Image (cartoon, rainbow, N blue to C red; front, side):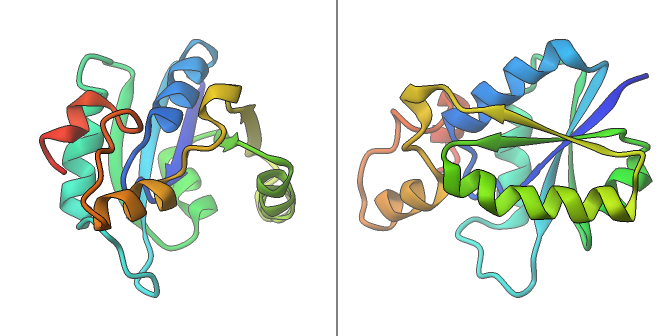
Length: 153
């Protein structure tokens, strides 16, 4: 069984995340959306809220699981028996950030491959950071997050 991990903070999940995941689905038997918990970062949404939103977003897909995790993402891959990690790339700077992480992960666990999926051009400006900024300032984020997320925000 080909299992992939799609890790991130998903604080909050955006339509760009959804697009990347849906495009990755045909490549794998199962994808685990791993919501990483980082105690050194101040989250906008609680872990439980993010878990509920992501589960609601992908409720119709039987081959998508959603889990919270802490620690090294590569260790979570091992725990899941995931052979692949999916990362979305919006820009050259995203690639430059992700490349050394993927290379270190490959060195630490050669059996796990990182798969980069380019964001569609219409989603390249959308990030959780921008969505959080809009939310903090009481703006309308409905064009940037999945419809299932609106009720939680």
